[in-house]
Structure formats: C-alpha cells, structure tokens
Image (tube, rainbow, N blue to C red; front, top):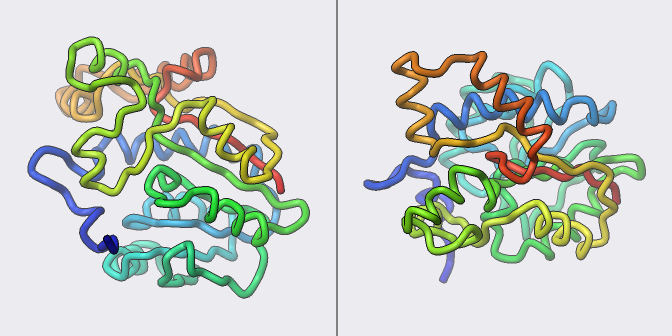
Length: 241
C-alpha cells in the first residue's frame, strides 16, 4: 500500500506526533553531536516542522532538506527562513545534484520501509570525508522498559499501535542501529545515547509545565545518559562511508 506522508505526521486521538519533550530533546542532540560536525554543507533527511533544521543553521550556511511531505515543507520553509533548499521527494527516489559533508537522519530511519536501500544511497551522497549522523528512538529507554513491565508494551523493541500510525516500521536499540549501519557498508566512528529517560514523553511534559522538573533536571538526565547510553531517550551513531 502506498504511504501518505502528509498524514503520518499528524496527531492522533491517543498519541501526539511531537511533545514538548521532543523540542527540548533536540537541544541535547545538538549538544551531543556538534563536536563531530564536519566543515561544509548539510543534508537533512526529513524535517517535520523544521525545528532541527533551525538548530543546524548556526553551524552551517549551506543546508539542503529532502522531505516526502509537501505539507511539512510548507510549514518548515516558513519556520526556517531563507538559507535552506528544500527538495520534495521520497528518499528512495531522490537524486541530489551534489555531495554532502554532513547528512542527518534524525528520528527518521525508523520510518523507512527499506532502510538498507536508503542507507546505501546515502553512502553515494557523502563526500569522501563526510559523516552520517543517525539518531533514533531507543527501544531500551528506561521509560519504555517500565512500560513493558507494566504490561503496556509487549516487549522493548515492539512497534506500538500509536507508533505504527505515525509511520514507524521498527524500534531500534543501540546494537541493532549499529548493525543496520554496518550492513549498509558504513564504518561507525562514534555511538552513544542522548538524555536518560525515566518518564514517558507526556509525563515529562506534565512535570515540566507543573514546575516539578526544570532545565537542571534535563541537564542531569543528559549527563546520566552519557554514563548509561542504553537507557536514554535516543541512541545515535556517527558514520563514515
């Protein structure tokens, strides 16, 4: 069945596509990854509303985005301003005219119907010294393991109904993410986790809005995630071709 990328990102009755937690989380993604950025240009694959794109703008002047949803491109273009080129295409069919020094798949790989096909195409789009940054939600996040033990999720790597409705095809852990990259022919230079996650997204949102937790709490979760990457909200690999 053909996928409608203009509907997969929309909120459903039981699950938001993006929580306040997700926007805070992106700040820590940049904090964890920026030391590995290469000088030069950027390709971001998938942009949602352009929030992560905006976080890349202070680091890069030349940014290209490939996005399969025309609705999301319209939203993101308004949010990010003028120095971003948008390409409307499914990744499997994309053919960018240049190579890139940095390519980002941020909470995107888990949506792909054929990740190996896309990853192998990406290898051809990297410059010889370029790096691929992959960040995915973590199957072994502490909050998710709690949900499994509560009987709310069948097992850590399960794709829940809400995730499936938003286009998720797989739930990665750090080892399966690294394996996916290696199978596509990449070398994994760095691996890790971002932001220790003891609460579900909606619980983080409620506690933050109520003042029960604050920015210092998130900083503490970030530092703890560096010690316990397997229990974090997201896991990442930094790869070369």
